[in-house]
Length: 164
Image (cartoon, rainbow, N blue to C red):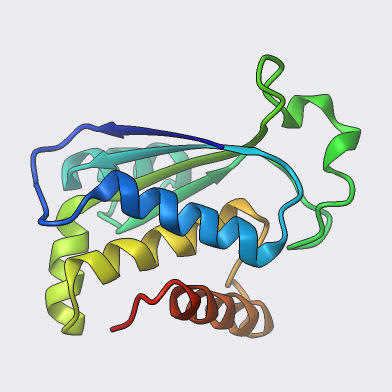
């Protein structure tokens, strides 16, 4: 598994962001039974940068906490049976499945942790988990999908021992 992390901002936390990323990404892949080695790109940004990306990619002029850019189109969330049919889903040199990109706004991690009354570490892990589920084909645009996705988030974080 390859997790490429780029830190483009200055806010620092009192936990190891790289180690927590690895723990959560692996936890999500294991929970979902993802059958391939995977590659994920994660970028830590400030509010100005995520606002610009949100505007460019989603035409929403607002700061958000995290953006997910899946590389694989799934017929159904959690169904990985057809991934091999498209060679573009894999990095040619490593054979890893190219799951996509996560862009995380670190000031929002801090603000939301304070707002929800839990640690920055928990908020960071939650947002990485949330984004990983998007990269695996899940969404929350309709109530039924939201229920499934949010339940999975809770179960994964619980299995990882990450609590509010």
